[in-house]
Image (cartoon, rainbow, N blue to C red; front, top):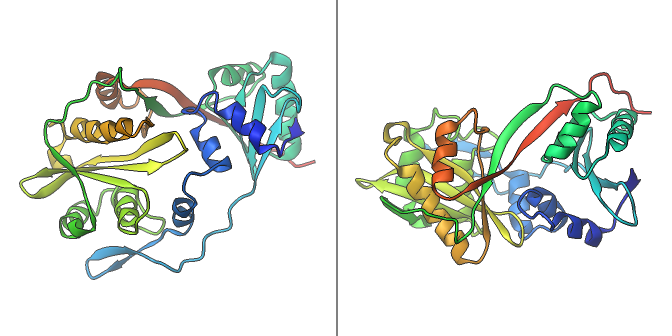
Length: 299
C-alpha cells in the first residue's frame, strides 16, 4: 500500500459511491466545518432541570487520518488509517488480501472495518474472523419513495424549547435521550439547531406534546443523513416513526439531495425497522463489518 495525499484523486474514487462512502467524503471535504467543530467539543451538563451545551469546551485532539492506495497511477483499493483502526474499501484480489493483512499487522492495526462485501469475503478467505455485523445503511430516491405523513409533524425552532425540555425530561432514563457527557443525538441535534447550525429537527406532536423526534445532519455536499429517530415508548407502534421519516425524507429530496438513514442495528436484529424503511421505498445499501487483529506489534 502506498501513502496518498492527493485529495482530488481520493475524492474522485469515493464519489463513485457517494452513499456508501459518505463518511470518507465528509472527512476529506466537509460541507460544514462549524458542525464538525461543534461535534468535536459537544458536552452537556444538567442545569435547572434542563440541558445546555457548553460553549467553551476545548475540542479533543482529532486522530490524524492517513490514506493508502494499492496504486498511485490507478486507484482500486483505499485504506483510511486512524490510529490503530483501518477502513478499507474498493476491489481486492486474493493476493492483495494476504498482503493487506500482513501490512496491517506490520503497522500494529487492531481493527479492520469495511462496507464492501467483496473486501469482507476476501479478508475472510485470508483467515480474518470473526466479523461483527454493524448497522444497516439505507437510502432512497424521489421515484422510489412512497411515504405519507399521517400525524402532525413539524420542524421545531428555538421557540419550542419548553415542549422539547418536557420531552427530554420524560425520557431522561432512555439511552437515546440521556444527556450524559458526550451527548446523545436527541439532545445534541436540538441544541445544534438552536445555535444556527444546519440541522433540521422534526417532532411528531400529540396533544401538544412531543411523541417522537428525528434529526437531519449535513454529511456531504450531496448527502443528508437522518442521524437520529426516536419515538417515546408509550407512542410506539402507532406510525409516528413512519411519519417522521416521511417528513424528513421529503424535505431532503425537495432540496435535490440524497437521504440516508443509518439504522442502529442490522436487518436481522431489527426486522420491524427494516420492514418500515423498505415499505417507504428505502433500500438497504450495505451493512458495515468489523474484525479485530489480536497480538499486533508495530514494526
